[in-house]
Image (cartoon, rainbow, N blue to C red; front, side):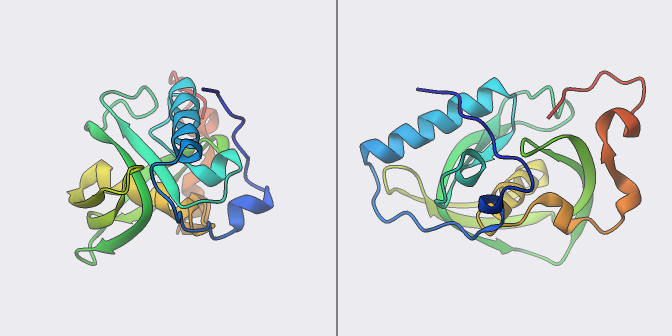
Amino acid sequence: MAIKPVLKMGEPLLLRQADKVEQFDTPELHALIEDMQDTMAHLNGAGLAAPQIGVSLQVVIFGFEKNQRYPDADEVPFTVLINPRLTPLSEEKEDGWEGCLSIPGMRGVVPRHTQLHYQGFDQYGTAIDRTVNGFHARVAQHECDHLQGILYPMRINDFRLFGFTDALFPGQAVVDD
């Protein structure tokens, strides 16, 4: 359908809790998801939340086979997740570098739960119930944070590990967020 502009950190909508989706399998919901897919693909993103394109609904998409922004990451199956509920399966967390399409050109080390159970629905109202780990768990947590008005810098513990990608990784070919 369309590539949408991505809101940047500082936009008030990114700090709001998104509204629950009340109706599934509607033309409006399908159009939103198609716009999100087009936008994410155009920007080589690993995921995208509806608030990032100015729609305050609890809708996230994520997944890829290979992603040039995360070349060492394992494949994550493409997922549409609506009205998600996340449950960490242990207290174990792992630090990892993250970027965000709403915070272009920057990266930071963020602690995330290593094992996660998530539930929600796809765009047709079909229940989703998965247990995941690794990068899949990281991406799900990152995207679902957007639905609560949380951006990844809010989760950073050590701001010495946050900055502009070209300064953090000088001389490396990096893909801008």
